[in-house]
Image (cartoon, rainbow, N blue to C red):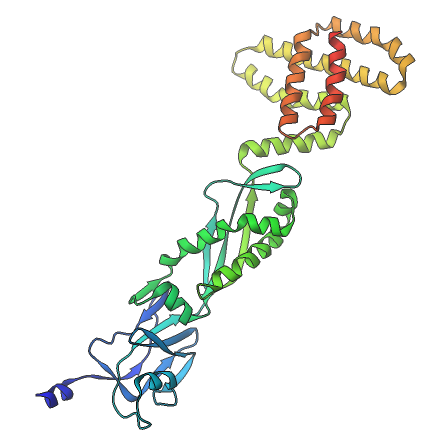
Length: 351
């Protein structure tokens, strides 16, 4: 009976893996009750590696090539099994194949804005997305840390973990690059290099090599983008008070036009716009007086006051402007010094 069982037993002569489709990282050769024939052939193709596992312990690792399974090609396994030098009997081990080709176009992105420190803006919430490519570099480590004894391990089971590692290290990469947000958005390649450098040792602990990473977009949430646009506009006008008021008036014109188009509050909007223009003129005259000296200022002050009275500038208008300036300061658009200077000029109107 034992002889019949031995005769019926199947032996494996060729061990190989031909990948079908994309997305498989690890595949276990189907052994069942079969044993590997002494002198059998192991075929490992380019873009593959294979490992032999004996009783739960990784024995031998094979790169691309064709191997005749003997004591010379299975030195560790031979030692573990304590075979004699003839190595004549069939043997049974688990054989795992690993795809070492690049897994390309793996997506990453920030589902929610992340907060970072910035040289220019203090704290910034930004969004970013791109893609990356990786490959298995250490199949033994990948087997023990990730894929284990599973029959098939697909890319889909790993991509969530890798994407999480990318997002987790974005802040460190930005800090390591030393770039403020504006430079970061303009130098996405440098940002990508910094992020790749940050991720490389983390991926290596999983037996994975990160081949490339791209940053396709870096942006601010919509509300912060509006503030940035205002800061850029203020940067263009500098400390010129007249230009500042002109800029604020220009920013308000679309809102006035929108209100007029909807048929509501036309008169009030028109009055507000007129007051804003008039106040801008008064403040511009006052600033000019300060630059020309005390004597000229004394002569021009009554004219400025008359101009303000003529167009109906009221204390509440000045207070509203101060509140607006306070908002700009709190958002980082104006510095404390700029705010104090403009505040002093406006408060003179209330004396």
